[in-house]
Image (cartoon, rainbow, N blue to C red):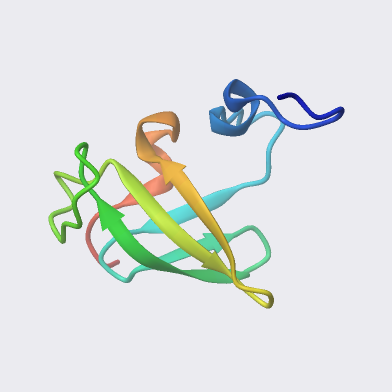
Length: 90
């Protein structure tokens, strides 16, 4: 059932750096940092089977908790440019 104004899955999963906000995902630190310095915690890193992993090479999805209300967001890392994902601390 479609709701008027609801985002379609293809709209939710795409990222266009020319139009969308900037961010950096740091798997080693477990954070997602947005332009302006706002940080959100990565609560889980999942592989392509949906199993939890700590290996950045296996990472396919991340689950991020967005403060202040605890909104949970799942991000498909295959839809994010490699320049936005850091596997090691810097």
